[in-house]
Image (cartoon, rainbow, N blue to C red; front, side, top):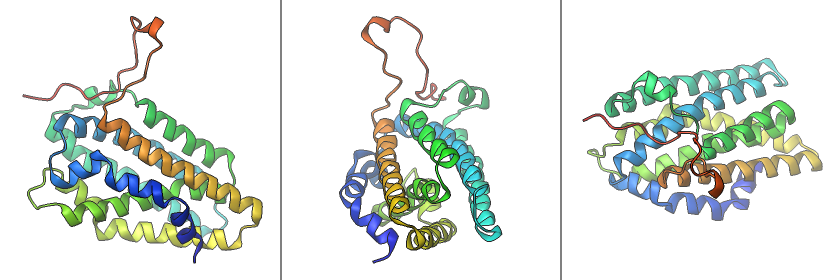
Length: 239
């Protein structure tokens, strides 16, 4: 069993919950509510920008030029996806640049990015890679699973095609190979840190989708309900 196969075994129950969660089942059937996906795609754009920054921080710690180039390329790819895929859907939903800028990252998005950036900035290189892996790996597997049940007329076909496609598959395979090499060389304490970072990132993946499906904002204490709150939900749809 490879290191990443063992990671998958450790988190198998959580992976199954991600496959079965309403957000992904509804996306596969094409019945995901438009306002739910709209809120999700805005938050995902915020997330991918921070994810690219975390990749860049990890790349700075890379042990070789080859690995540095791989992670730097992945950071560039994350920005490319953010520009292309999100421009498509934000244009479809009538989300202007100014409307997007006015929407702050949700609590789930902010929490996930804080975890990744902290892991990349303060953790060792192995821990950073393990924390970053689920965004690659889980998205590919979810994309593939959704693609099996989706129809060509699915309104979210562009998203499904991106994450179940060959180009994304190649970047995921490279990240899995890197993680396996690092895991095989790691000592006991390093392995423990990598496993913990991977498990927490998997939880954040579940939390991100669950929060998007329920359109959760920043919860306010009862005494502060009349005070201004961060706006993280979707803007009003275009007519």
